[in-house]
Structure formats: structure tokens, C-alpha cells
Length: 316
Image (cartoon, rainbow, N blue to C red; front, side):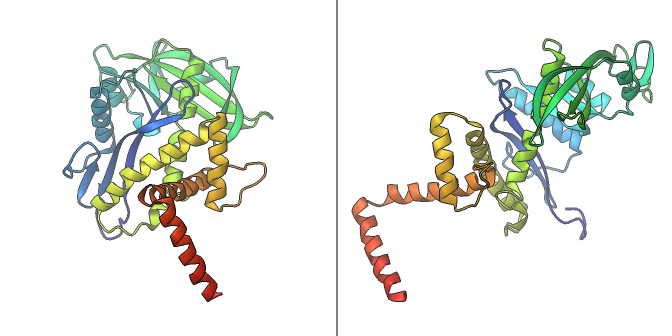
């Protein structure tokens, strides 16, 4: 990307998820950094390279300009833990991010680390959640902080934020995750805030399906950033389609999932008869079959079958 040893790509992506259940709905923006610059799904020409958080702010601004029928809450990983950028985001949108336990913010009359603040809070078990494929118990606690770091100069009226301490354990009490969450969403419970951040894991499953578990992105043979990005846009939609089907528990969807797994030829465990990689492989074959059935009549297909049978019979 920048010199002979800096080989590969860098993808920044957004995934739209349903606030009722966390299920993926659609990709909502991608930036691909290459040696040529920055490819963006909303721009025709390659753009100059930008720092990560500048990319994020521009992506959020563009998403807000879409004027979707529902209010967006932008859930970002820990890289967004920048007080200055969070203050900028607070001017026009709702956000939720994770912070480091050693980060300092103004709380109760002085600057404190989030870990120091969290130790004074009382956590209560509030819900069960699924994280990294495991069921866990969710504990939460919350307080109010001010978006100003100890290292920053005096700022006129810095905005307030909620700090939500979220802890997920398994049924035996083993800690699976501990998050220090910051948000400017005030009108929902701390439990819902913590659950929303658990749902951010969906984009990790989405990335995994793009890479090792599905499209094997690292093995693509395109040689330019533009070609890779065009394929990425199509593949990202297919990944989202597979995830939506995987999460659908309706009777018709269950039957379709089992059909696609059988069509894929993949071997699955009895305890988990449907997997995302098998769904994606079966979906590809099913789309190919559908294309054939639309393009050729039943008589033509039967004719091809007779010719193929005769041909393979001679080979045997």
C-alpha cells in the first residue's frame, strides 16, 4: 500500500443492522485503501488517502445524508475512542463506541480513568446475550461523564456522554468480555446500549465470511485495487444475504437452509446442521441452477442430460 513490504489492502466497512434483533440488513458503505488511494462505494473516482477517523467522520456524514426512515446509531469499535472526534460526531448524530479502561475523562469533579470510575459502579445481571457464538450473562452499570481528556486544554462546555460498563460472563462466571462503552444516546436503557454493542460482533462474522469462511478474499487473483473493490461490493451483498437467511427462523427459511446445505455438498455436524460457509456455497450453486433454468427450456435441459449420459457412459 505504501512501500514494497506494505502488501495487501485495508478495508473500512459499515453494516446496517436491525435494532430489534441485531440481524444484518445491508452493507452501508466501504472504503478500500490501496497504493492508488482510497476507493469508496459512494465515489466514482479514487480519492486521496485519509486517516482512519477522518474516513469514519465522512462515512457517518454521508450515511446521515441518506435520510433513512429510521434514526441511525453509529456503533464503532475502540478506534473511535477520541474525545475530539466524539465531540464532532455529537454535533449531528448518535454514536456508541468502546473505550480503553485507562482513558481519562472528567467525572464527578475531577479527571479519572474509566477503570477507576467503573470500580465504583454496582453491576447487576440484566440479560442473556450471544457473543462470539457463545451464550453469556450480561451485567451493566452506568454513569455520566464529560468528553474531555486530562491531556487537553480547557474546552468551552464540552458535551456530556453516558459511560456504560458492560460485562459478559458464561454460565460459570468466566469473563467473556468487559467493555467500557461511551455513547450520546440517552433515551434507552443501559441494557439496550450494552446489547447493541454485542451486536457489533455481526460485522466480524461478515468479515470472516468475506475472507476465510466464504469468499476466500485473500486468494482473489485481481491485480488492481479497482478490480478488487468492484468484486468486494458484489461479495458484500452476498455475505449479507447469507447472514440474513442464516438468522431467519421461519419454517420456509429453515427448509431452504437445509436444501442449500445439501446442495453445497458440505459435511456438517448433527449438532449444527446449517453453517454460514455451507449456506454461501449452496446459494452460489442455486443461483447458477436458477440461471440455467431461466435460460433453457425443460426440453433443452433433458436433451443436454441425454447427451451427457451418453458421453459419460462412454468414458466409464
